[in-house]
Length: 206
Ligand SMILES: O=C(O)c1ccccc1NCC(=O)[C@H](O)[C@H](O)COP(=O)(O)O
Picture 1 (cartoon, rainbow, N blue to C red):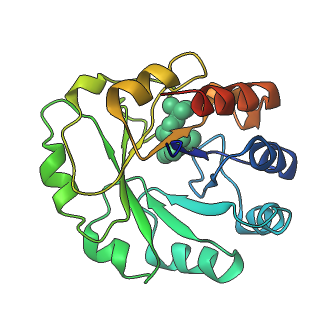
Picture 2: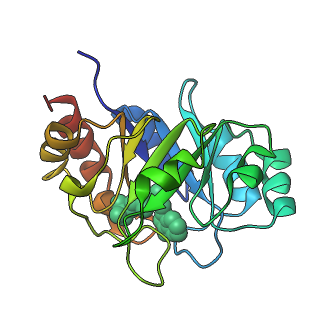
Picture 3: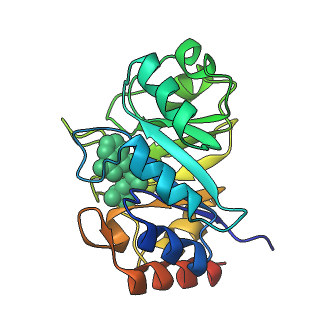
């Protein structure tokens, strides 16, 4: 059986990127959102990506960024996939002619199926916890029973750790899991032992 894919998000330095890659992560996430404690500049991101071994997907994350900011990153950094983590409409997301995933937050009363259907060209839908005023990277889980079935592959995010990811995979059966705070020693710094433990938990999930 194929194992669930893993994206380690909020990578801010080469050491953490290599630790994620060597632990077996399929993708790393680079946050281009200045208010985040995990934000990187295009220059930092370019150095991180240049240090990666082959076959690790690079994901650039934006939160309602202007188009020229996204374009500038794409010009400076070899990015494989875009992740839009704000309220970006489909027309904006497709305008860069790059594969993208759309993040949706599990806000009470929001029709997730409808929101996901507004992004028919998204490669996947990332579902994250809803915390008022915080667009992501909250370390909070949400009720996985509330996840509707979606047309696009599901990326499960929000408060995952080595301790709960096996339960998440068993219950939700996502295409991929996305983790940030659960493998950190402090905001923006990954704990390499936690990264390895998380990967091991995913590898052993059934
Ligand atoms: O990581 C951030 O600081 C962040 C800030 C603003 C928007 C999104 C952000 N992170 C997005 C991610 O993909 C996280 O991995 C995801 O929200 C899960 O985070 P966590 O609950 O800490 O595992």
